[in-house]
Length: 105
Image (cartoon, rainbow, N blue to C red; front, side, top):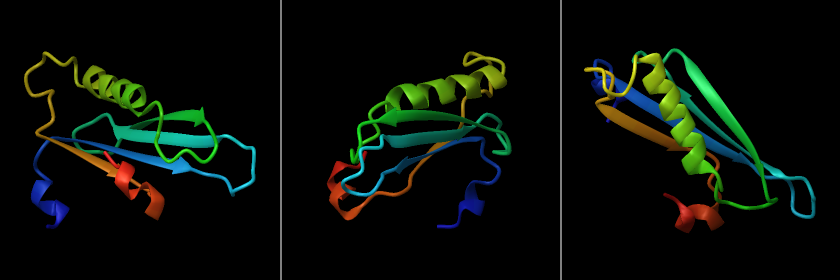
């Protein structure tokens, strides 16, 4: 289904990605979550978090997403303002390995 169907609806889009380093590396994995702060999806905020190496689940996803959603509502004049709540929430999760498919949200 093309996303243009939703072009006139106010929406909140959030995308997450996880950077895993090669097996044997001791470097921390980096989790990133990005979300829009305006109804036209042209302004974004991001949150980054270091976490244990080779972990397929974003450990702080709930808090990072909450902070971005809070930024969205603040930019819209507050969660209680009429019309500030999105009609749709679209969540993208990039970079899920074969081993991580059973761990998805």
